[in-house]
Length: 381
Ligand SMILES: C[S@@+](CC[C@H](N)C(=O)[O-])C[C@H]1O[C@@H](n2cnc3c(N)ncnc32)[C@H](O)[C@@H]1O
Image 1 (cartoon, rainbow, N blue to C red):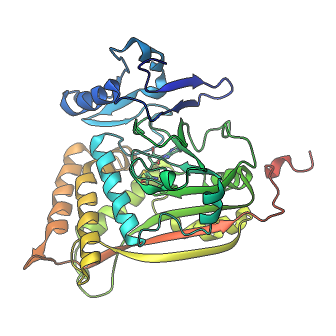
Image 2: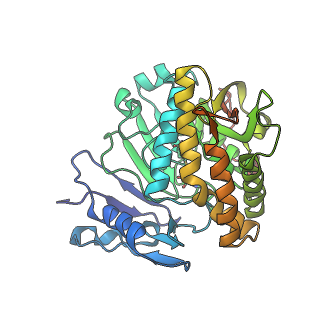
Image 3: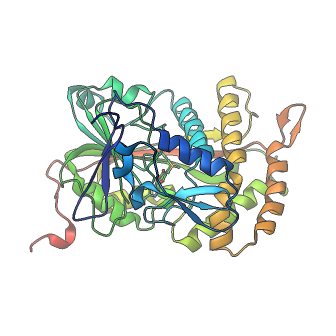
């Protein structure tokens, strides 16, 4: 495939499109082109589809709806199952995800996962990363995970076709909906480990997702979920008065709920995983400061990053939940965000006034060795 950096095949039974990246690939012009278009063009408030039109004849086969994006008031969104995910997928969002990735790894003491799968991955296993956006994940472009386990095959699934071009050879991606009504294209009983990070806040039917994960894991395989609890927790009295970030999170929760998902889904994960049949659940809660207020330098650094991640993401986080979910106007959103920015940046002598933090929870569980591998509704049929 001369000069073809992305290889596509359409599956027949679902709309899912699989595309593989190879080490020998060159940076693709269309990705850059889309980014330039999203950044520079004044497309107004109206939604517009950006078509994937490459100058490279070899990449004309990419012209499919899954490879397009929707631009909505200067923010770019996925077009495949459009509207499913409430947040953008543009360069700014990818940068924020990179930052969030670095923050998460730092917070977790360089652990990409807590499930006891290291030996398995060393020997060679099958891993699925759900919500594999951009660069920073278990299947990580620069990170050590896929490179560190050359015998293991890493698969990523996401609504957005924005994965990097340069990835380890043992990884591949599918543009698909975790909640696709037709199920997943992977066979049942396939994976040794399934990882879901910073994604369940956007899943509308979590019990169905846990069931899919259960059914696609091999008996004895592990699921691991990692997510922030998006509540501005505080251990002293610094947040006792008005705090616009707290209000922002409450509105975000209400807006997402109106769109069909729950911002703070992680608080239900333990019960839901048990109900789905997983056993030997273990979890770990970490405090992730918002702003550089802690004394410990490592946590101060984490706080700085998280504050940037929130600050840079405000408009993208608010746009659809506040406008489409709660009916706010653009002006109302912008006016409110000014207050949120002010409180995020409020400092005395260089130290943030509000000593708030998010809980970050990692939870993993095992599918029983004798675990049923077929959907519950097919048992006995
Ligand atoms: C905040 S990003 C997290 C990315 C990555 N897991 C990480 O930890 O850095 C959430 C990702 O989940 C994807 N996502 C959300 N809902 C999805 C769905 N129903 N099917 C597939 N991907 C989905 C979004 O497209 C987005 O890329």
